[in-house]
Length: 345
Image (tube, rainbow, N blue to C red; front, side, top):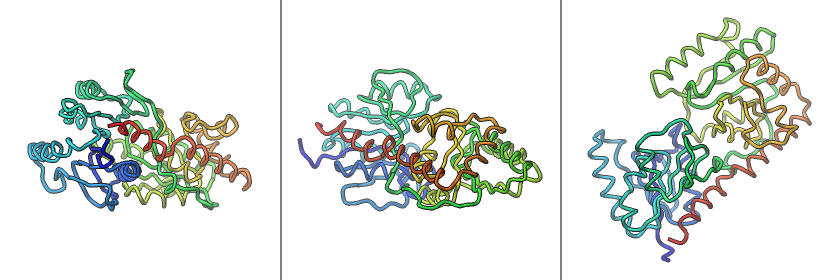
C-alpha cells in the first residue's frame, strides 16, 4: 500500500464562514491526520488547511450552470481516482452516485447520511454503490449502515470555566418546524408572566418559504410582555457559535429526532442543556434534570430549577455533561473510524 494515496472527500461546501457546512472543515482536518485528503466541493470559501489537504471547487461561488459543475467534477475526480484509497461521500447521496467510477476501479465508497425522514431513488442508488454507510439515524434498516454519534471538535468546543449568573437562554440551529421551537416560545411567555427575569436568544436562519412562515409564527406567538426578552439572531458562522454557547446559562433543544449537533457542542462546552430525550446518554440522576418533555409548563419549571441550582450543584452538572460528550461524541474517534475504512486500500 502506498502511504501517499489520498482519500477523496466529496462535500457541498468548504468555508469556515458557512453557518451550516462550516463544521466540515473540522472533519477534513481530523481525517487528514491519518491520510492525505483531496476534497471536491461544490463551493469553496475561507479555509486554511495543512499541506495534507487539497481542495478542488466545482465553481458554485462563481458559476450557476449545473452542466459546468458536472464537467468540472469529473475533470477533477477521474485523475484523482487512480491514486486514491477510495471515496467518502459527505451528506448528499448524489455525491456518492456521481462517484460510480470508483466501483469500476475497485475503490471503496463510504457514505455519510443522517436524515431519518428523507429517502428516495437517489438515496437507494447511493446505498447500492456504497460499501459502508455512516449515520446517526437512517430512514430504513440496511446491513451496510453503521450507526454512530455526531463527531464534535471537543478541543474547540471545550469546557467553559464560567457561565453567566443571569438567566441567558440559547436556542441555536436552523429555524424549521422539525426543530420544534414553538414550545420554547410558549415557555418564555410563562417565564415572563411569572416575573422571572431572563434573556433568550434564538439563533438561526431559514432556507425555505415554510421556514420563513415558521419564523413569523414564532414571533407572533410571543406575548407583549415577553417580546423584549426574546431576541432573534440570523445564522452565524460555525466558528462563532462558541461565543453564543459561552454566554449562555442554559441551552434548549426540543427537536424530537435528536441529538442535534448544536446540542452536543453546547454540552461539550459544559452548558446545562434541556432536551426531550436522553440523547447524550447521561446517568439517571442527571437525565432527570436535563431530559424534559416539549411542554411549555414543564420547560419553564425546568429552566427555573436549573437556574436556581446552587453553584456547586450546577458546576457538577456542567462537568458531567461535558465529560459525557467528550467520551461519546469526539470527532477524533469518528475521524479515526472513517480513516480505518480506507487504511488497507
